[in-house]
Image (cartoon, rainbow over all chains, first blue to last red; front, side, top):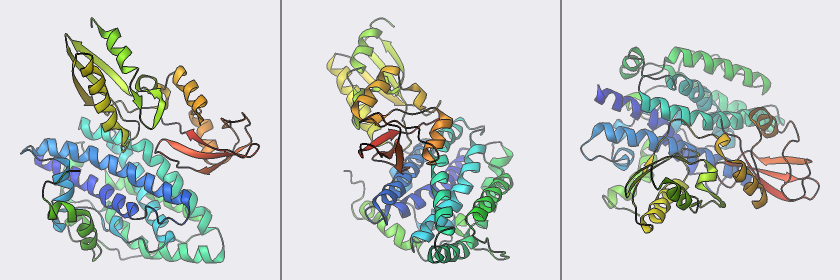
Length: 250
Length: 161
């Protein structure tokens, strides 16, 4: 059972870690000072949540494992984040749309996890949810501002929505571990999360005058460890130090 | 709990490194103190998950108490999650004097952060003719505001519930 909870926590933590890393790449590169600070603040919140998840995971694993081992010393197939989280910072529109889709999924997911039978997971979720409410507020307001902005900002936002929508469905595809965790009352019911996600997405898209594509085909793989071509570069960046100098500390 | 008051006094000298005027007691970060002779267990909770000040706060608590002759252990607890309601009245006053507007109650905070209502008072001149510049500020717990009367920018401590 411990092993399964461990696997489940990695799934939760990896999404936040990889998206947090993507956002951290923007530090000092945001389009304005305010958005730069906002995006890196969101990144910091996500990393804080990841530390809470991975500290708990390390405790479950025993074997003197630490949160750093889990974060830095796994191979690409062992990371179970959804493909959405690893999509690149193509432009500000892609950054905002990726964030918005993730936040719209993250908030109802955490709402369910606050009721988890696993006290640790429930506590982490209760802590995180307060922060994620702000994230969704931030990303929704930029969806509206740019979607319903100038002709050019609208066009860029619509292009990002069209591109990234294909990565949303995977968030709700239930893996074996997720099904099992749901049956024990530890994990979330992803169909309920999907419903809440849909309500938020269509409401905000309408206000933002953006069209959600009527797609039949979606990308998937990340949750099974099959990642996109971007992932290797992320790991190279993320793991270089620990791989080159094992066990190094600041 | 003999000797507990003295421990509390020492803890009052430890401050949040990002808001040095505020002691961790005023901040509501210290949740529980268990003393058993010289052995002390201090339970602290983070304001935000990623708050980089937590490690430093834990170190400073250990340092301050160890210097007073205690053997200190600091433990991080997540539940119940910290809320801005735990900032003491004294703490709120110190925040304002330091130039950080204290958190409003939840519904007013939401309006202020959506830019819909002028509720946050300028810490420099007291005017409520203020606007939000950014939902996120210099640290995770703050938003950035500007006063339209005296034109000074200032931090606002976001309500967290």
